[in-house]
Image (cartoon, rainbow, N blue to C red; front, side):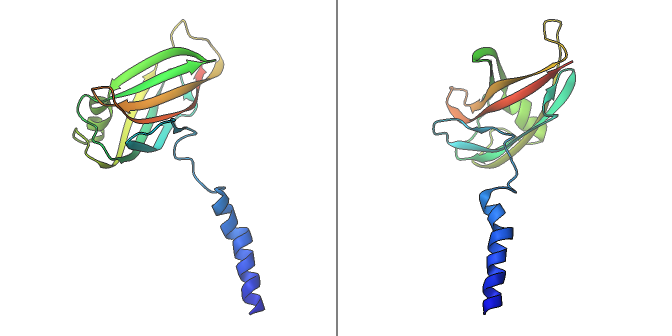
Length: 162
């Protein structure tokens, strides 16, 4: 009986405890977190490669999660970029045309699990800085055509300028 408790103690201490603390937990949101507030749809997977984003290269994105409310045609994905506390860029895309349909799915996207892929080529302009990596704060959201935010995540993104 003594050996059983020793083995159980070793298992809890060395094998199970690191998992419970999240040390082996994979970051499926690339450092992003859900925005403050309540949203009917949850983004549980967001990755981009390369990370950091590199100018004059194509970055591949994946976004996925669970929806309780459909993403209708006309929904858009918005990206707001802040640098040193100032709004520096706002970009909006048609969610169905740029994400859903290129992933081989039809729109609207009904309630349930979703997973889409996209890519973007980031051009470096003559106005961009050179030979530096800058980190900004991004808020990414998916909203209905009426403007109701269905999902929202936010976090830091680094961009390498050549």
